[in-house]
Length: 229
Image 1 (tube, rainbow, N blue to C red):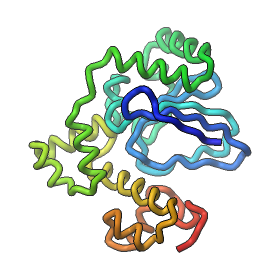
Image 2: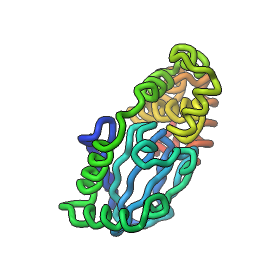
Image 3: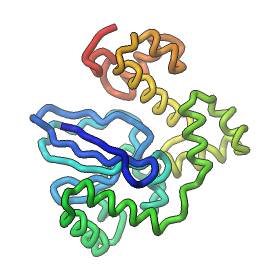
């Protein structure tokens, strides 16, 4: 069973997932990075450009999902280096430091709360998030074109692309596509017809929505949501 709640860290989400069987799971691209706990180990999930299939792992997971663009400053690693990857935290940081953090998480009342405390401590010792990055996310999530977003923020196209790679793991066009997918899925899950969902979220038509869902999520939209139409 999957459950989540808002974190005390601004913009972040704390979540747990305990699979009820051995069926494979599917994590869809959302522009975020996560700090993960699994069976006493700490990992980092980089930003995805396609669905990550868990392969029917029955293990329990916990995580902190960071607001898009904020995790690289906490981890000290550009997001594009972790794109479409799940890596041990010990591959990024000194082993002795990771052992101390892991022990603290494992000693917490529950792994999710332990991860949240770690994330809050990291954030307290880091520089505040670049406010420009939040503006980029807000503009693209509102459906603003990439070129117009760059102009409104006083950035050149190349500068926006470079900063997006470091913060989000991919360029602004890919980020806009991922955010549009999430907007569409939210409406479709609420029961909106697929054609209306496509129109409201900036797709050219329902066929365009269907292509993007298949490419990014790996399944047809109806199969992904368990319904048709």
